[in-house]
View (cartoon, rainbow, N blue to C red):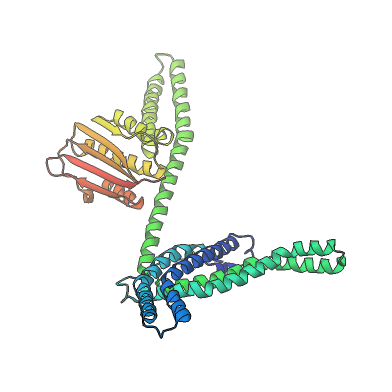
Length: 420
């Protein structure tokens, strides 16, 4: 069974009262009361000239020229205010209502286009919703409030009746009826809120573009795949570190002990010594492999320490300038991957001797820049390293920029959204 996406659809589920949807329905109703009150205040201000015009006509009549002129002027002022301010007020209320709609409806909210206040049908739909909020909302809110007050006040009334000496049997029956009606409050709130939200969506929201929705889902799917890939990388790193590396350490120690136990003239001493050297070399390679898969320093100490460790092990002379502090784990992983890939390319392909790493956080973005003095000519289409980095950066919502003219220098810059 698919999960409910509206308060009305949730109401048909058996565990409705145990879910968060009743509270969302009540919250939508409460905020609808606030919005309706604010709309009435705004409309009262705009219609004040009409009220004054009617008061002039009732009190003084229209036979006197000056009073007739005043009533006409006030009427024209009221029409002007409604014509000039009314549509803008409706559009502002519509924007708030689209935001408030998320309380009762989890489906995507797409705003209707606004090509002009007076020529756009969306503006007149907003005006229609403004009248709906001003006229119909108080009616269903009043019914809901009266029903809620009746149910909630039932225990107080019964207590007073018992104190007055009413028969216990009749009081108990009415108490049971009150308890039975208590769960009806969230259902009634869900019905009214869901119906109102449906009208709001009909008048204020456009149909979602299937292509745009599919594109959003593709982006989300790519992000999920990248997260799953990072989680798998960390699992492999833990297995290699906790299992394979420990067994290799144990094997190296046993070979060392065996080499010491063998006599110097034993034919087996040379093969055992050679196996011992191979085991130590393999352990060093495995340690480098583990560090490349998911650096423990990155997870425990952060991006700055991990980049400094990477720079210290590089054959290049690397200048590191990284803002201190921790960043979101996904951002740190992609940023470290960018630095690692750029430095590796500088060594393998650019014949560089020096490189620089600069990491800055500005506002809600983290900028990672790596430059080297190599021969340049980096081409993302020529290998999988930069292409894979571009994919990981895009999956994280960022972008990869490369400047690498022939003769150098090469600059690799990654820009990532960085908000906690």
